[in-house]
Amino acid sequence: MRKYNVAVVGVGAVGIEMLRVLQQRNFPIGELRVFARSSRDITVDGKSYQVQAVSPDGFAGIDIALFAGTEGEKGAAATYAAEAVKRGAVVIDNGADFRMDPDVPLVVPEVNAKDVKRHKGIIANPNCSTIQMVVALWPIYKKAGIKRIIVTTLQASSGAGRGAVEQLKEEISEIVAGGCGDVHICAEHKAMPQQLAYNVFPHIGSFGECDYTSEEWKLVRETHRIMHDDKIKISATTVRVPVRTGHSESVYIETKKPITAKEARAILFKAAGVVVVDEPQKGRYPMPYEVEGKDETFVGRIRQDCFSKYGLWLWVVADNLRKGAATNAVQIAEVLIRS
Ligand SMILES: NC(=O)c1ccc[n+]([C@@H]2O[C@H](COP(=O)([O-])OP(=O)(O)OC[C@H]3O[C@@H](n4cnc5c(N)ncnc54)[C@H](OP(=O)(O)O)[C@@H]3O)[C@@H](O)[C@H]2O)c1
Image (cartoon, rainbow, N blue to C red):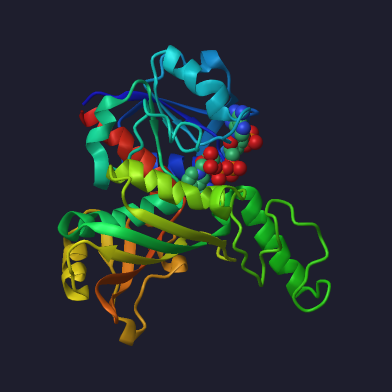
């Protein structure tokens, strides 16, 4: 079997998971290079990795470069993705820099694996909350069509990187130790715009058009691109919650053809990458702390709108660092090497 030289850029919340997923899925790696801003040795699940300071020439001889660095103007992808492509690598990027570029396929393998073929050097991994939503909705879309999606996300701290996980931990310790009153912390919020322990806030990204946040627009625009249907009306509210890892979503859809909850459940039972956990009377529905470390998208509370045969509710949960980032990126790499 052919082996591939792989680079992982970034060893934060997603990058560490990327190393784990490559190992767990036995990705056929020849040489593995791990890059970050500075060099050091790290250990993941007992295996040590030498991290090198990233540089353009570091990508020479690399076949696949998995980017999990920071996004934006001076971020890892903006600075080094083109350099990696110039040296012959295919880049799979986890950030938002290329997701809306028409020359860059935006891929969730369960939905649009075939788009991988039209890459020109860069393939984008969608936002974590988009990935789990489209994995759950695509099988229903194929059967009944979807006209409208209304989604509220409950997103874990690790979705904002390792700094946010640290902030949550520190805040919990501070409150348990007495804090500044019962529920307030004294320290400054380091990584997130608000206190997260004992709190939730409807503010992920920056506010823009229609008073939606950038994170809310990602759910709209990325879903349109992945499902190749920009007619779907999508409204989102994205909320940060004091969970370590695992995003939850309350999703309402209006279908084109009527569909019952029973039919939707049967379709989702057979769908790739989906696990149905839907016995609410027994207290069984997906929960973030149970899906941490898993690769599937979990769906429960599948129920009909009492007032419309076109309306359906779903509760969708996935590990944002696995299916929402690292696993999806490695699955794209698997599609790439198969094709
Ligand atoms: N967290 C999620 O759930 C999630 C989901 C989907 C997508 N994403 C995206 O995935 C990317 C990584 O997110 P994260 O949560 O893992 O972030 P993170 O925990 O903050 O880690 C960022 C990593 O990137 C490295 N880095 C930063 N700037 C760099 C540069 N210019 N060149 C090389 N490496 C650089 C850092 O290096 P040092 O260690 O040396 O500082 C660090 O290892 C982001 O684009 C994010 O939007 C995240």
